[in-house]
Structure formats: C-alpha cells, structure tokens
Image: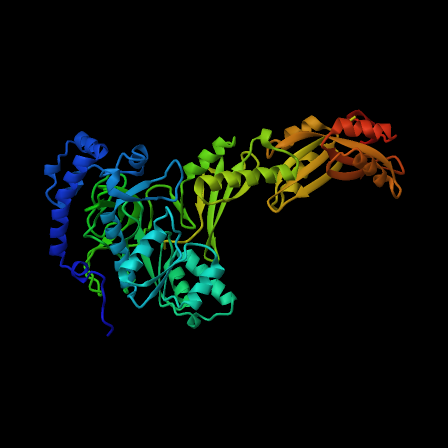
Length: 437
Length: 144
C-alpha cells in the first residue's frame, strides 16, 4: 500500500478531542481580538448583548451575530479590518462587481496560514517537492492563482505560474516541462483535455497525475470525464475570499467530501431561514468562523452555500470534518464560468441602460463550458426596424454587462411582454445545468 | 412624398409570421407589399397595408409595431430601371438602409421601396431627376 502523506500530519490527523481543544483555545482569543479591533462587529455583538467573556468554547459560537455579504458591503472597504493597515501585506478581492465586491486584507501570518491550507490540498492530491504544479487559475485580485501558487511553494513543488487563458501556451508548458499537477477551474480542465485531444495527444502522453479543481460547481460526471481525458485523478477544492481563498477545504484520495481545515476555520450548518444551528448530517447553509485570522477576521460568515458536514472517520487518516460539494445556494447567486453572478446585477445594468427590468437569464452547459444568455424585453420606443440598430443595442448591453460582471452574456432582445411569467411573476433564472442530482 | 410602412418585431421561431399574417388577413386588411429581414434570433416584418391603424392595433397585441416612413419609387418594368434610381441616390451620397419591391395593378410598372438615411433629400433628388414617388394617398388609388 502506498504511504499516506500529509503536509502537516500532526494537525491533519489529530484526534477529535485535540482539534476541539485547539478550536476552543483559539475562539476565546479570536472573539476578544475581533471585539477589541473591529468596531463594526463589536457593535453587532453589543446589539445582541454578547460579550467576549460569553464565548468560552466553540459551542458558544452560536451566541454570536452572523455576518453576511450585506455587512461586508456596508463595511467596505475598511470596516471589518482587524488590524492596522501597516500590518497588512496583501489585498485580494472577489470577482464580483462594484455592488458586491469584497476586499479582504491579509497580514503575512494570514498569507502563511492560507498557503499552508493550499499546501495541505496539494499534498492530499499526491503532491511533493518532486512535482511540477501548473497553476492556471487567474493571478491577481482573484484568490485562485495566488493561493495555489503559495501552496505549491510551501510544498516545494516546481511551480508554473501560468494564470488563466492562452491554451496553446498552457499545453506547450504542460508537455515541455512535464507538469504533474494541474490547478484550474474544472471547466478549464475539461477544455484543456479537449484541446489536447484535438492536437492529437492521448491521455497517456502527458505527465499529469492529479488535478486540483475548484471555484465553480461541477458534477461527478464531469469529474470522471476530466479524469479520463487527462489521465489523472481529479480533486475538488473549496474556498472563498471572505475567509481566505481556496484551501478552506479540500478533497483527499477518497474523493468523498472536502476536509475543512478546522484548526483555522470553524464550520457550522444553519437553517438559512431561522439561523438555527443544525445537527451534523443535516443539509443547510455553511457558516465559517475564522479562528486565527488577523487582517480580515470574519466571525460567523454566512457563505450562502448549502451543504452537509460529516465527522465520520475517513480512510485517508485525516480527522477534519468533511463538507459535501455545495449542493445549492440559499440566495440567488449563480456561478457561471467561475464568476459569481447575481440576477440583481443584471437588473441594475438594464435599468442603468434604460431598459425595463423584464429579463430572463438562461444558463446551460455545452461541451463542459457554461453558456450564459440573457433575454431582455425592449420598450416600444427602443424598437428600430433596422437590424443593425437592434444588434448594436445587443452589443452595447453585452459590453455593459461584461464590465459589471466580468463576464459577457449573449444578449437577446425580445418584444415586450414576451418573457414567460408564472403567476404574473417573471421567471428570472433558468439554470439548465444538472449539477446536483 | 413618403409612404407609411409598418415594422413589427418577430421572434425567429416557427409560426410567428403565420400568426401575424393570419391576424392581418382575418381583419380583411390587404397587404400591398411585404418584406422580412431575419437574423438567427429575430426577424422584422415590414408591410405596407390598406389599413394602417387597424394593423397596428392587431399586431400590438403580440409584439411591437412602429410606423416607418419609406420612399416608394415607380419604375418601369424593364432592365436597368432600378439601376437608374440607385444611381441618383448614390451620386447624392444617400445611404440605403434596406430595399424591397412590389408590383401594382397597372401593367408594366413596379415600385421599389427604400428606407434611406435622409428621406427629404432623397425625395428632392429623385424628383429633380424625373423619378415619381408615391404618397399614402397614391397607394390607395393604385392598389386595393
């Protein structure tokens, strides 16, 4: 049997009692730290009548107020900062828009912690200092590239900081420099697989052995298809800018849920309607409390991702709680080609551009790539009987959406009152991707 | 003298043209000329009809209809007639946005319908060159 390897064996395989003891110790300190340093959250605690002394263990976390995306927006940009800016060394941001953008601050300690989490993921996927890790997540404000890049450095792997796009170059580097681990979105992995086949490469022609894929929803079916086309084992990874980035949780060789790095992040599942904490094994909204972050120390952040937690032992030897892939959202956010999209953003663009808010978003998946179409009703005044005028309107709306969302939908202008309404209310989103069976 | 054409937006799906035409004919309205421009997603139905107001009322139930001023120029039914008209417009630097043609009851005559970027200028230049353009009233006398 193959030797099991871990990046930080002691903590990754610690007993449940040890993990709990670490969490209890950290949470007491962290709540005090946040109360003392983040006036925005202190205010929320005061409003709820909770004092730092009330939190003596992770069991008491449920007494704390939640943070939501709305809080982050209200506190933008510095309201949730946990330390003086001179102690921070990095900013990362979500792919979202002006309206929903999240800006997170990192101290060097935060960066190290985040990169260690990514290093655990890489080692869990079989990575070591003998590997060549090709990172084709975007670099820059997006956390994907920097996170895996840092993790790969920590592991000591030879890192190829490719960033996203330019598939010809990706393939050239992959083949010429013998990349062994590929990190990107699952849809890009699928695309690389197809591109390799088009160029006449068979799956066994590359040196890849594993892929670490995240930042967008994908199915088991897609996993098997990527594994086949690249000749690898594909591992899921999860994270969000609000907590750090990728590596909050990651899959092991079992491929049965992602281990949450519980020494840094405490996970709860709540009923999204009532906020009540649900017992292990029940489906609900995932809530994270960062146990030791300094720059952007969020407590009880509601991710809006719906999933299930399990503390059942895992054959990989890791003892940290596992979460399922997100099974859905408790809000209306869609993830399209790795980009977070809210219907409200589409609506905002339409109103700004002088259209009525009668629209329909249709998302589907063709050849493992998301398609994104927006049908928009124009008003009689906007109608021109020149085709070029209508096409110019579509093009201009596409541009406005692209600059708002970072992704441009195909726009289809349609006549007024033609978008289907059910019970008088328009159906805003039709997501045909079968991601969760 | 410009004439009134109606333009309606149609989805490019089976049955939409049929539905529009059925509605017009059901009201006893005669379609004097017709053209459909299409793209992958949608089409634009352009018609010249015997009852403008009623057609607008009928089509508005399902889609957007607008009145568009276009020029209808009489041409004799012989080779080179259209070329002559276009040559006049081209020399005056007038841009043609779209064009279609129809025939009338009178023997040996056809009409070309033009949407141009400058309708007044186009009419003036055509008249100057001896071309005859129609008005809505003219249409009522030459067509049912």
